[in-house]
Length: 260
Image (cartoon, rainbow, N blue to C red; front, top):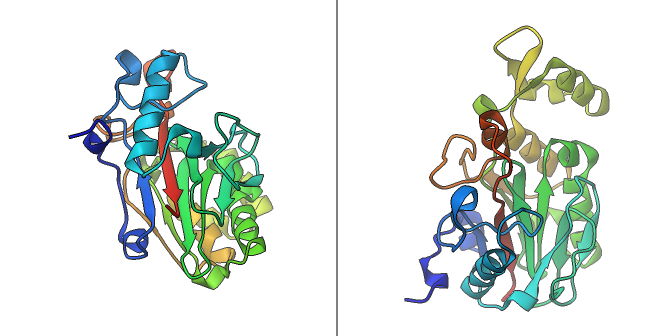
């Protein structure tokens, strides 16, 4: 069995039935140690760079490619979506989504509580990956990703999208001001907040909000895998969990999709 075969990414029937190579990779199956145990793919983390590169290599091989095929942005919580004609060979343009109509590039995003979104229009032969934290989701990364796919020939109503492992509502406490901010920019989004432990706190439903944004963007079918990154330490890295424990850093998980 190869090292890449040891990986056990989360997949979803919506993309499985489309025969699209994809995976929401967990923290398992890599070579990193300590806080980064074991499949840390965060180039910007303080992990051993050689371990990070090996982990990324394993994911690329698992999806039938090489590390040179990976196309992953330097993420900035924006609404910027990039188009990949080929793998980026280590280059990381700023942005928070990657789409392609070519076989070869592996569109990838990194997360550790934010929502990874993998999208595909199989009839047009177009796939994409988006990084949607609260800021990017509110700011329009979902719409930008769908628009970028549409510019390549995709039809939103044909797109299937899966929201991967991310922080769930019961694990995601924010200030009450977040609800006001969301309602101001996206009227109706208040329903994704419920009361927190005190009057000035709310619990935010990030995956529910991202699914709503996908619906607004005209995506034909979408689902969440149902995995809570903060609650499942054995499988997932979590920024929030690391922060609450006072840990100095945290690993990042990769979610990726390719036409093969």
